[in-house]
Image 1 (cartoon, rainbow, N blue to C red):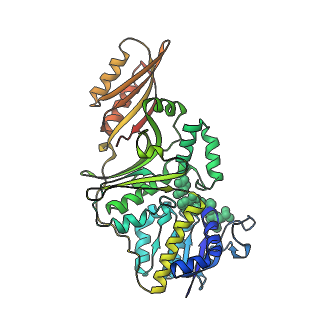
Image 2: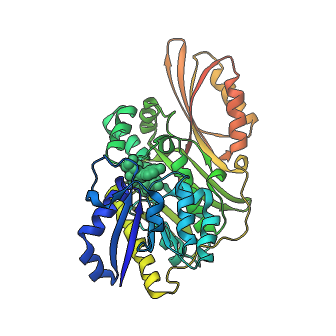
Image 3: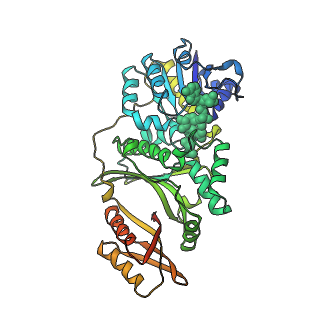
Length: 423
Ligand code: NAP
Ligand code: HSE
């Protein structure tokens, strides 16, 4: 029996999926036992060239959802609206939904999962985190019984592509961002990538699956890469680090803590070698140990492959008329205060090169309970660049120390404060 598929969005991912459904129709049927039939693909601009034949395109979004031959709706438009309303509209008609929209899942996950469950259909989102890397299924199925303690990794391809090119080729930020957009890695609005919003949504989803506690995109502390300067890439390398945008979720005694920020990563850490648009996520648990999931985190082909896997599962479920994929569930839990999270910092200060300045700065850190692990100084006439790496202390203490340092007459600028992830 055939399952009619309607796609909302025919861009980088939607266009690639449509082409795969048409070109690989027989391979999919013979490998999976389901026959998928592409019905329509909704786009905004009917004049744009597409990766699929023009006769499949429409600019009427609702007509795709409401088409009686469409049993399975794939949302690949991105953004909150109209995606959210269309997903709800499809679920209300008992149609299975597949999406790669991490922003939507992180914002409205519980309501959408509830709606899917109440209509007895699946809402699948493997491609929402990690592009082509299977990550959602291992977390929600294979590891469902493990008390996971930490997820840590690189979950945004665009920023990893930018930081890698700035580091190894000394390229300009704006120029590399433009290339990431051209290659289809970036979101329609790349502010979500470089500002940390895309990674925050993914971190929220990973934490929810790992710890069984709903965090939501808004519960994630975030900093992007827009403030990263080439000087710190250079100084970091001298100290044995490279800079990565990391997502960290931890189940601590104070509650679940989820954050996204750039971090100095030791050059011998496995994450340091993850380059370009690749993603890599460590998942840690007391019984299972450390698992590393790595692969292409963005781009039309890898992402459409992950979406297609979901489409096949959802189609199998529709054909079987019974639940095949476990439903996503969350329990109650509390979120930790960000001020209580332990962090270690790399700090670059531009200071007066005068007697007693270093002692004064060390004193301020000491007064706030922050211990200094290493110091490196380069003098230039009356001024000096001071690089400090602190030991771990709470975010609250580290930030209070930095505020006090900023107010010192001898400190011209706190030029950078970047967290360090050691292990
Ligand atoms: P994209 O290239 O910008 O494609 C979006 C598509 O949706 C376009 O075809 C666009 O039409 C259509 N669209 C958007 N708003 C519309 C509206 N109001 N009415 C009708 N059509 C509309 O985006 P993408 O890169 O394929 O990403 C799609 C989703 O996948 C997003 O949620 C993204 O976060 C997620 N994702 C992307 C990647 C990736 O590497 N690109 C990886 C993982 C997940 P036009 O073409 O006419 O403008
Ligand atoms: N814009 C996203 C990224 C796409 O660069 O990682 C994959 O979700």
